[in-house]
Length: 232
Image 1 (tube, one colour):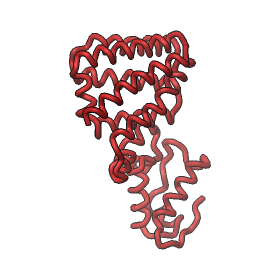
Image 2 (cartoon, one colour):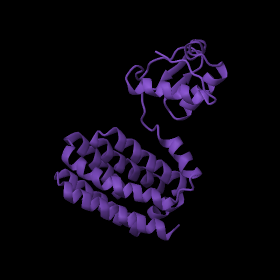
Image 3 (cartoon, rainbow, N blue to C red):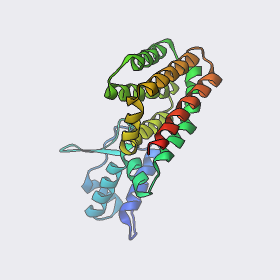
Image 4 (cartoon, helix red, strand yellow):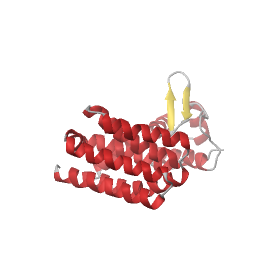
């Protein structure tokens, strides 16, 4: 099951072996890892190296450490990219405009997929969000409704990667573009434009028109991006 390790960077090799066991299905979601003592015996390394590896696996979101119970492979990986991606983005000196560039690349196609896949219940939820955004006058509510509208479209795709990446982009916007994101929703003129754009995206998805859904999403994100860049 485990291979003894001889290396100067021991904990990294422990991580690689555990990651490989997840990849090949030996370890599955919710599985409990062996105790620290068992891992020390299996890997033939020090307890310090095992603890370093476990801490690293917890930071990158692969395991949960439960007091008094042990270490477990996570059951759910929703939102797992938030913290590590934010840290990497900051350390790499990422530019705020890069966030919108990624959103435009992914969300235009996401709208098309949603138009092809959406069911009646999902459409009803999307329409409620679009209408709530149109009528709301509260800035904080509008920010949340806008995020939920985009996330609902991502949910329709049933694509784990799309959902996680777009969730992470939204999180990064809150971290690095929060002020600019709020400013666009304070202006009543902008609010009316964005609300109309949401409705058009919703209608295209409702009509299962993938090309139109992509086009309306592109217009929407181009408008948002242009405003944010002008206020950075």
